[in-house]
Image (cartoon, rainbow, N blue to C red; front, side, top):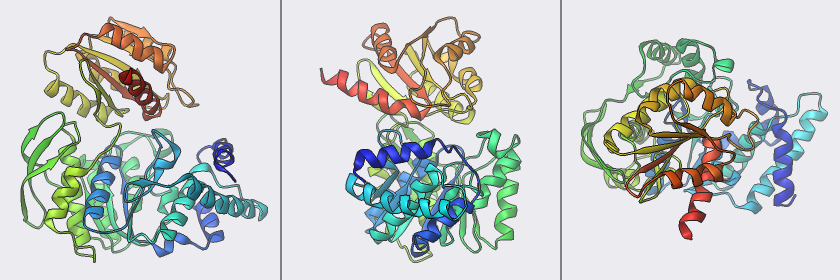
Length: 433
């Protein structure tokens, strides 16, 4: 298959939707010779912060000299970004070759009477193939949804199971209580691995501790950072890890005050990996934290007016976004661009953030069957804010925001990651003119 044929094949699998459970990925990887068995993993689950923690951990490991695979979902800016080695996305040719092998395996699975694997299962299997071919020392792997029945949970050689903050999300699949959701997330814990978690709500922490004890795993809980000094483009903090080691003036360049807590969790992960044959010098840790980039998370795209994008799409993420808005943009006039998916907590996101907006512009995330219409989002937002406008497209929303904004104002685009990639491309094109 050429690249266009590969994309068309992947799009055809999208129609199969989401099918929780491991039977599909097990059958598919068995046909491919179980490439995941040749790899070691850091497995990350949670509701918010998974991608940022993945970026920190994988960048630090790269700086320490390891060949590091990273697998993230969903793709925000292009399909190939899901599969990377040492920060470089899989090439078109390599993706085609991997998906060609996966397509043949899918056909054999279906011919044997089992359901055809889904798109996420196919992408996950392709990633395993690629990482094996590239002889990765370690793979940092993000779950797609949940954990226990997520396709990524096929893996066995987990060195570290990492839990970022857990909150209400994907309730239609994972359950309508925090305990049930935590049960699914904690399913990534494997016998004898290290478990590292962010601070959690009591119900979630109880589930994680129970799972760790049952699997004979040492549990580490990341602590809060100290001496945090936050800027839009640079932050510094101090941290004392679980072993008592003190780190002064750790530096990160990701925006958003919550990023220091994500970095602290990554420091604990690196500490546990160092005990399992993946030693990391402090100089590499510091360089990796400083060099980490993660597009779409409180990312600055333009100045005067300031244009910021953020993937806050549930209540907990909205709460953290609001904290950053209060800190960075006090006494600033802010114009929101919002796009959400129907199955997210969009009303709670609005309630958490609306007080800081001078104007709200809503849009429909393009090309996503789960998208909430701009009109429905606007109707809900109007119950919280007096100035809400509907845009017919990403391009129109950005144009409206720039017309409304003065040079000292802020345009903040947030919500579903599914539209931020397009908005970023449109913004870059505009800023080049």
